[in-house]
Length: 265
Image 1 (cartoon, helix red, strand yellow):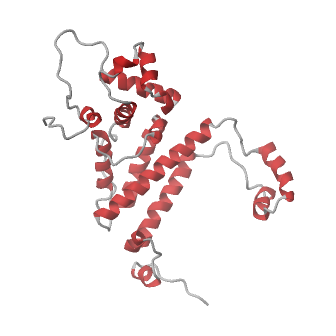
Image 2: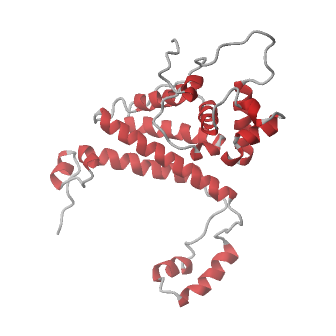
C-alpha cells in the first residue's frame, strides 16, 4: 500500500508506511525500533510516566531533539510502544465451539499480555486501528462467531470484556505495588475488629467476628479474574437479546429460553 496521506503520522509509522524519504549514506545508529524498544523497557521497569521522550533520550544517551527526527510526540511514542508490547495472540489453537468459552480464552490471553507490560492499561483506550491491536480484535470476533446476537451487540460485548480485563489488571498491579502495604491479615484484622463496636457497621463486624474477613496469602488473582469473567459471560448468555436493551429479561423471555420461573408456594 502506498502512503497517500490519509493516515496521520503516528499511524503511518505503526503500519510501516514511510512518511519521510530515505537518506543516502551510512545507516543511522538511532532507529525508530530502538526508540520504541527502549520506551517499552522503561515502561516495564518504571511505569508509563517514565515513557517520555526525555526519559527515552536519557536512556539512549542522546538529546530529545534526536528523537524528533523519528517521532512527532509522546502520544505517538505511546501508540507505537503499545503496538510493540501488545504483539499478536499466541499461535492459533482450535477455537472452542461454545462462544462463551472462546471469549474466556481470549480474555485470559489478553490478561497475560497486559500483565507482562502492566503500563498497557494506562494507555488511553481508542478504537483499534493498528496492526497488532486489530489482530487481537480479529481473534475476538472469531471467538464471538457463534454468539447468538448481531455485530453491534458483539462489539458491545467486546468493549465490556476488554474493559473488565484492563480494570482487573490495573487492580492487581495496584495491589502488588501499593505503598505502604495494608495486609488484611492476622494482627491488622484483630485490631480493626476491636474498633468496629464504635461504628454502625453490623454486617462488617459480623464478618470480622466470624473470621471471614481476611486475605489469604495463597489467594489466586487468576481465580478472582476467572470468577468475574464467568459472571460477565454467563450474565450475557442468560440475558438473551434483552440484556443489550438495558432491561431485565421478563418472565416470559426467561421461560422461552428454558429458564422457568421458580414455583411460589
